[in-house]
Length: 258
Image (cartoon, rainbow, N blue to C red; front, side, top):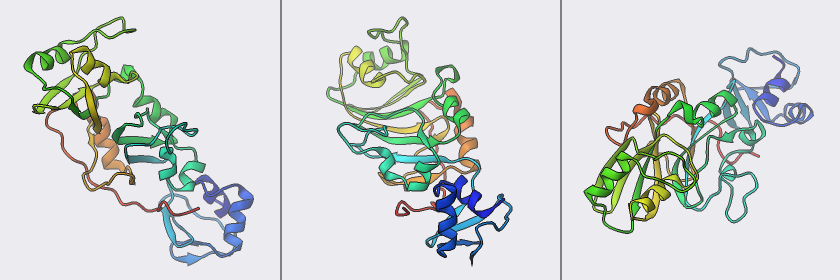
């Protein structure tokens, strides 16, 4: 494939912008500086370097972001910065989108991708993919509240009772809760329905993939093949118990490229 087209497919701008990157000596391939934007390369396994930052060619982008508190999952945020401001420009230009949303006051694991089928799989309620949260409550959580969350609670505007697929009490005011639906403020509404209130909310896992402890708030990582397999293998079986952490994939492109 033509080098300029390769760069364009990875989010480095229009064809003209990518040609200019090469012409200005800003692009290397496998450690060799390139001068001809029309030079042909095999895309699979190719490592591009733009302004000294390495990017492995990827047919589709699959990312995990540790979303901090105080960020909105929107390209047009209203009250807080956008989570997309935490990503390097090439990823935004290639069209990665958040897989579902986390509220501004919720932190934790957020998936992003430019693969529409992937986004649908992990947002569709029919797929019953578990999302696991750790939360702190205002009041002490008792056995009756845990039992009610597992049995199902009635929420306003919901025709059927909504039940957690897993619920583990971490201490008297902390829970690990697993749900498969993606309703608006679902976890907060479920806790309110049993007479309690969520004070802080953090998503720790989706499917079988757990937010790596070394991925700090505001950082992102590529999801590699093993991560995607772990994510898919979890399915609705990823309850609040027995979570295992995945490996931390290397971050090739850094948030500083523009």
